[in-house]
Length: 445
View 1 (cartoon, helix red, strand yellow):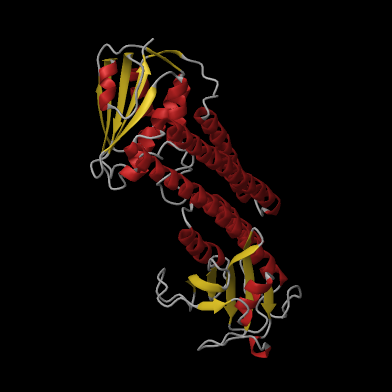
View 2 (cartoon, rainbow, N blue to C red):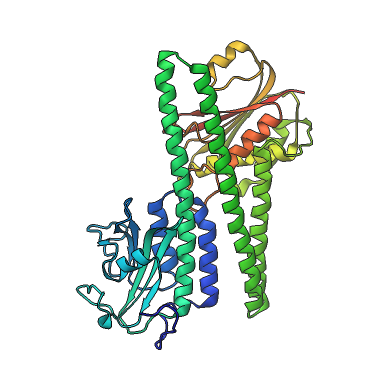
């Protein structure tokens, strides 16, 4: 057993420094949008450990009692059924090499398994092994294990790489656990709200408490998500700047600089979106014709938007007082969401109309708005719609239903912040399997 000495044979991890840094950078970005533990474990097995060419890898998760490891993902010979584990391996803490790592919280390299008395041989015994614990708040929550058919296949560099992967995975597990705890508290309070509302007792006090919990949940997601996202973007920037020094030619150097610039741009947009959500963006409202803005946006973003766009723009539209740049960002966000909701194609509908909104009109809306004169901008798609259970969360920061790497979940929260700061409102009207509709109410000037 050896933690620090280099193996005599070539290491199992042969990706090289550049591949290693690029793989870890990609992981740092994609981990933002991994929604749960299952997606995280399989992503690490297939897209991180597998890409770094660690063979025959198994990822274990510890049970709640912290006494047993259960196989949750695998790559290589131990994964013959893609992402389906038919008979997951179970290893008690302290048993064998893997269980020993879970108990000791210490990573190990075994140069020759046949000389190790704690090795539990498979039907086809391996000859060397590397095993690293996943530690969260001082507690082992899992183990990453990789075996190799050759003696001395792993060295200190492999241990450093796998330890880094384990640390990043553990950090994401902590964030997911915090989100789960927050969500469980929210669901428990929501159920209490339903029961007590039926009895019409302490309703005012309970609603105030419910609002505070939702506010604290949103603040927790906002601060934690922002710190996580921004740190990952900084990792990408610094990593690519390191690549510049390793570049072999000008074209490669330019590629790394472009990737760093892209990450810096995403960081800038992240802060802009956060300012909009918090209603502290410095807006410069001017008298604006929304019809002209919509036509210009569609023309300038033709390649990014759905192929079929139908516009019904009212004649003699009333002017509104808005910041044109922020309004354009909000509208583009809604259009891009509509496009993503129709992966197989569909029609995007955009409509404007002058309306006089009264108190009685609030009965048909999910949110009350101040009576007065408005221009209502409606954006609709023919996608799958918004599930009813997600309706209360779609405007929350960092909430997203998009797949890994497709977005940070700030688009709608930014739209909400902009509309509220502009004195208007945004209302979602979900129709499951019939598309989604968003109505933006702009006060007329």
